[in-house]
Amino acid sequence: MTGAWRYRVMRRATYFLISVTLLLGLLLTGCPPEPPPVLGQGSLSLYGIDPMTLDPAISGEMTSHEYITQIFSGLVRLGDDLEPEPDIAEKWTVSSDGMTYRFYLRRGVTFHDGREVKAEDFVYSWERACNPETGSQTAAAFLGDIVGAKAVLAGETQEISGIRALNDYTLEVTIDVPRSYFLYKLTYPTTFVVDRVNVESGEDWWHNPNGTGPFKLQEWNQYQLLTLERNESFYGTVAGVESVVYHLWAGIPMNLYETGEIDVTGVSLPYIDRVTDETGPFYSELLVVPRMSFIYIGFNADEPPFDDVNVRRAFTQALDKAKLVRLVYRDMMEPADGILPPGILGYNEALSGLDFDVEEALASIRASRYGSVSALPPITITTMGWGGSIGSDLEAIVHEWRQNLGVEVKVRQLEPEFFLYNLKEEKDEMYYLGWIADYPHPQDFLDILFQSEAKQNYGEYSNPEVDALLAAAGTELDMDRSLELYQQIEQILVDDAACLPLWFEENYVLVKPHVNGYVMNVLGLANLNLVSVEDE
Image (cartoon, rainbow, N blue to C red; front, side, top):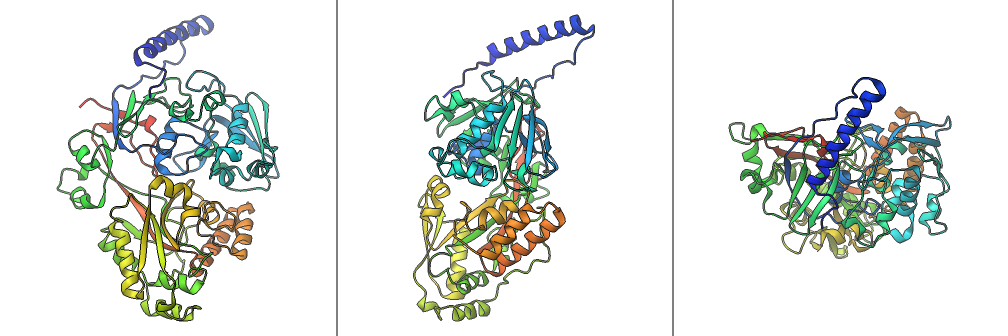
């Protein structure tokens, strides 16, 4: 599929507009305006797989976000310091009670087709995201704090009472109680603005999206190629490359990087020795970036046997995570005692985890209502895949349980798209999952994954004490006190074996020397409009 623009026509039109702007500047002010930016040439080539969706309201996984964050944008974004900063909203104010926000939109921000973005577009976008017919699994988490949003999510009305377009450039948003993390939520794709005409053009509208981001979708041939072209009228930093070309399912990324077919690649385990060899050809091109993520095994706490805390604790204590990280991951991961990754607000170095201890694990089984391993019901762990190998990591985990507990755990694979969007209904007794921070705040892990009513609480974990503390932490505007509460919550979750923490990730990435400005943040995303490519 192709976009509506062609490079030559667009470039000629752009140069004509630049000339007119210069002339008007001289006539009206007597001096020339600031010169327009010099647009870089060239193309950035990347490996990719097809997005599962390009609808910001629907997307809930990183594969789709990689493209959506280049094509669409929202009121605010995360800055280099991982704090919310202006995006389409040039500024905002907050009422003294912390519940009413007024966002003042930049003038002249346009969708890719040239129509100006107005406050009413955000009203439409957010009400659409919350409409049950849209099918969003993320709207409740990221927009549910707004007054009236829950009524829309429940299908009781179609209008969110807490959102008002005061005029074309002023959006007023009222939330139910003060929340220190509300602005962080607005950096997530669910809150991005979409064009109503585009959305209502047909069910597959997102195959030809009319966004506001630094790139437009030029072409998408499924399983082959996806090309983004520069949005030369972007309100922010205009991209330093003409296009970004994703080679979809094109082979082994490391091989493509070695042959020069792509400019950037993540490094998988089989290649770690080659890229970390200081005398080798790749070491000078290597970036190692901590990823604010959490890999874990979830327990179905609503069904036997993991509705028994002692069984959950036993499976946690029977796993030697340090050995697995060393032997399976070659120290590319960090063993996790808790849930919050290093670097996030509230990270607790003094957290007390459930240590590897086979004798304690067997004692926990004896303390359970089952009394012995032989009395446990059949146990299956759900993971994603295409029916082939389950991976050396999960193989090692299953082996540890077999060796240390005497339990045989079966593995069931679901295709990734089905797994990620249907896990709550499809999980077995356990599931294997990773969670990457949507924003660098503990609420994004502890509340979204473990609050009793949270949609992403796939394990059905429910603890009234945790729920009460989460509510208190989320509305506590004293940041130090709030973080103390989150640390208390995390310790309770660990003690209660609400899940089995495995490890925190690090990204190993190779970047060609002729690529400038490629920086992957701790959320695993790069601002591709800041990248430029030199002639080789």
